[in-house]
Image (cartoon, rainbow, N blue to C red; front, top):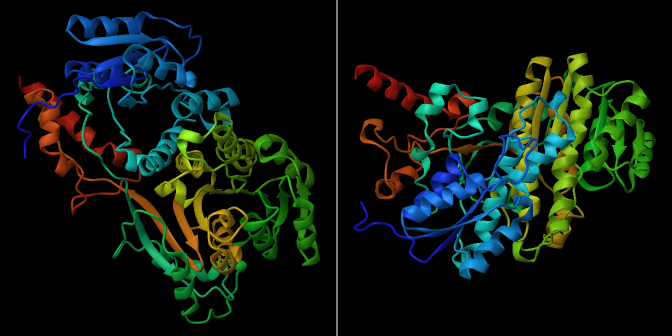
Length: 553
């Protein structure tokens, strides 16, 4: 039902970053036209941030547009890495902040093999700490966590994935497409809350005793079965999963020779304890040569493997120095076939109490180390036409979790990174997947009851890691959740949404509000896009409609 009156933001204060052009400019103009006082933040400069010097020109132009139209606005030229200065501009001018739109962005689009540390750090810094796939998906985990933390204070947080002409799209879209998708089409963003909709595509439960990778592979169709998919808003109940697993029939002996893990060289980071140790032990059991990487207890785990008849070495080099870690592997065995990026730490604090150091420590240990190790290993895997990479995320990255904004953002970023690298490595027989495990470890001990920590042994998860590292790995670029003998494929779902008629002009905020129930409704028309082409399907349909209508004129 259409709203009875115009949506207004009188006397509210908004901060819009990257507002000097494109989408950011349209967001600022739209809010200002409806009574909002706006801080227009922009450095000016190029799409990739190279050679930028602070320029007031673009921000000042937008401020002038707003003032000429009778609105209130002030410019800010600070880098988004100095976010507190941007917010302080609003507080100094109007004494408050009601709306924050984190829009600033740059592109450094290069393949993993050609990506430099500076490219990675620039993208993560501008998009997240304020490449690209990791930073943008990280905002999902970050946003979901902030939504949980802010709910009791009437603070809502949502994530927008727009497609419109801007300084960034000029590098990847044709001139005609950029002209069609003028950013004014997307300025109508002031709409009610939305939720990320997650599917468990399939569910497999097996008894934990005697469980091997081959048992999981033999039942893989159940992991990917979309029948009766669930739509949870959080991780499953752990103890119930374990009870279900223990009620299953015994696992019959099977051969695991088809995995072809024997002789493969594997690196496992964060392998000094917990899940990482379990992964290292599992891979060694099937004949892998394992480099146990951890700043603590790495040598102890390597000795355990040797005593069990396996082959292992250890390094206490931090995974954040991924190039050095991979060099240690290659120096030891002359190659690297498998990388399990498991290293991680916790620095749990609510967002309002979290220091920048606590944010950065978690981001570097989880997300940046995953990039560094993968980038260093990738050339070897490419040359030998074989590689298996398992990146470890978390249910906090998928669903968000109160008090873990840093951890959730890093773990969600790993999902985006995995999906991008899965595409880059596919033609070289490099398969990259991402695992969200749940088990009793020193990390979960801080938030789980003692009986659950004791019951959820990490070895219940490790067989699926061995499968994903094997020649028989059946997937690429996919999210797997695992806990207590339960395994599921997880995907995000998208509503069908609403198409506005191009010939009718740009939709107003009221137009969007009138159909918002349809925009957020997950019904039989919802889909699950897996590729960039599927993701932009409806957008491209609208381009075709526009061109057809234009041709008739």
